Length: 573
Image 1 (cartoon, rainbow, N blue to C red):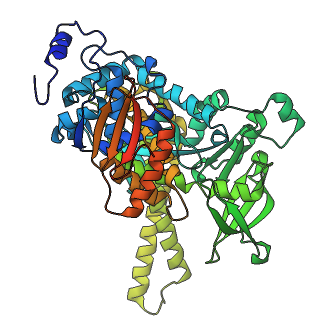
Image 2 (image 1 turned 180 degrees about the horizontal axis):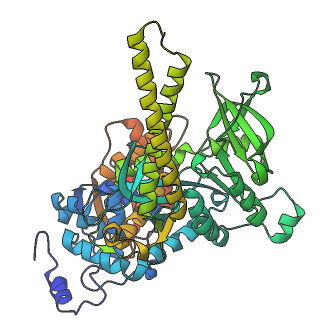
Image 3 (image 1 turned 180 degrees about the vertical axis):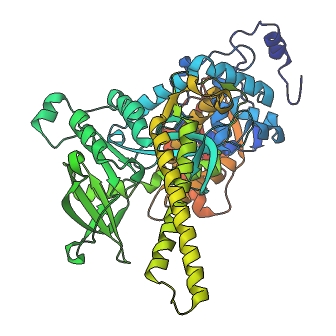
């Protein structure tokens, strides 16, 4: 049967196909359960959709039901068990107590269950459903959306993915690009994976904006937009990679979508007398002082010119950070707060990598890329590389030839003068050679298409997409876990406890031991968390437990109401 398998009858029935409904959850009184404190996150996980829309996922047969797997995955992520392989070093029976079973599934079994849950693109459908639910539940947060790309580096050998620049490592490495859409405090809505990365602007036009127009709630009607020429549907915030006056103009003219972006070419500094210190309310509730100034600005050139609002922030060092926006209706202080909150998305990436290891590729296998997919032509890339190399060599020799021409050697010193003449002649010969080579490359460059279809690639240049079903399912669980943890941090935040301290408090809580005490006669499941080393922390947790108990949550799959308490406190008070 294996380690900690105590339900022999049910497991035997499941092995012969006689347990159609799966194992029933049954809690027994047990003390000092490792990671028992993670049960305190269950109300928040449920509120953030851990089981919502689960009918879109594949159904499971056997001992472990869909409910068991989803609950355990949520607890596993919050306990910082980053990979399924790390479960081999954990006590399966102790973790099984968290979900009311004798033990958790073995690693190989769990991977098979994930494949069943995510087959036939089910994980993508579930993630899309949750994204819509999150937007509907918080329409104000969905009104301002932050978009940024993140490269997941791949070091495997199953396929040769295209190289792309990884800013955090300052290297060009093989991998895939994920485009994340988050709210103003970093909570994720959805992600779009691009193995063949066309760039942020094209992803915005073809994938993100059409989806947001369909899904963002509480958008103004056409009549409201006509009545107020400065009103927008929603606002997109992105960094300089998305800077394009043409894109700003198209989004406003075609869809009435406001854009906020850093100014790529801000020009001269503004007089410091224009800046006034303002109190700015940040999306996380914090109030900060900023020296801000605003002025209209004509951005772009030629037919791409668009009139935009430009807001600049003056730092203590005298540096001016400029942003531009087509959100004409908002106060400039609000625009400044939303743009300068973009760091929250970078913090989200850093936190997810550090704590949830969401960059890891967890699934073997590859899938074919559609034959019509456009990719960069390898011949074009090779010509481009050659052209840049020849241009660089030509530029250096032109500079050296100009230097020799401006500073000729004296004719009196025949030795130096002859050397100067020979060097000049050699440079002139090299310049003519490289100039001819450059002209030939330019002609070939013009005749070579930059993009070709996948089917037109030569076989040695082809690559494949890594399998994403299991990865997307776990990414969705991690998004739910992050949102759940963020919600719990919001319950303990105070002037003395900021977000960073709140997250450390949650991590310690999820790692703490707890007693699981079922009271079937009163239909309660008491979770008694062990006290911490600091009385101040215990007081914060007691307040948190009081808030959680107000939810009166029934443990999924049972009729037991969860009751949280701390050792040394009377739960009836």
